Length: 84
Image 1: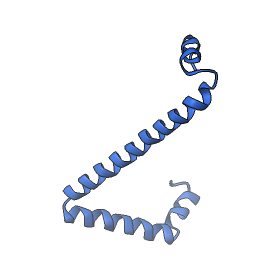
Image 2 (image 1 turned 180 degrees about the vertical axis):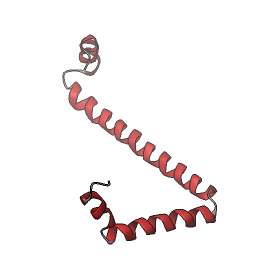
Image 3 (image 1 turned 90 degrees about the vertical axis):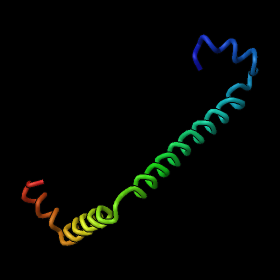
Image 4 (image 1 turned 120 degrees about the vertical axis):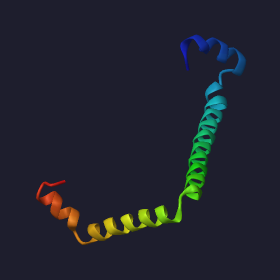
């Protein structure tokens, strides 16, 4: 709590201000974070809906290629040889 607000909070909320306010503040912060997640998820869905099938297939193929390299130890060999 800001020192300049202490007297006002104590006078308006009372001595139990921490129990009364902190839970509400945490709840509001949690709602704000969840809303941001929802907004990001919605934006990703809108973006994905606008991508062409050709581009989606390209990205999918690139991910599958990198996974294959990862599973076969390609990146480990590069790190060992200090290429990465």
